[in-house]
Image (cartoon, rainbow, N blue to C red; front, side, top):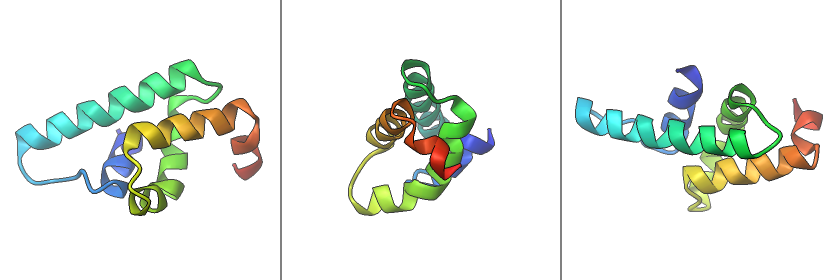
Length: 84
């Protein structure tokens, strides 16, 4: 849960209201899980990476799916392990 919470906060998706926060959490978890499944990273590492790059990615108008994909590509190339 910590991983998705960090991503929600980084991308400004943490809102008031149970229905909307449930929708945003589902979206974040699904996109992060898909990226983790399709790349060399795992969900925990992806969540940690989101803590670092989320605010910068949001300021560049990247969404959570695009950012998760980019982290996965870096992981495939072995670059995320250098930063960990």
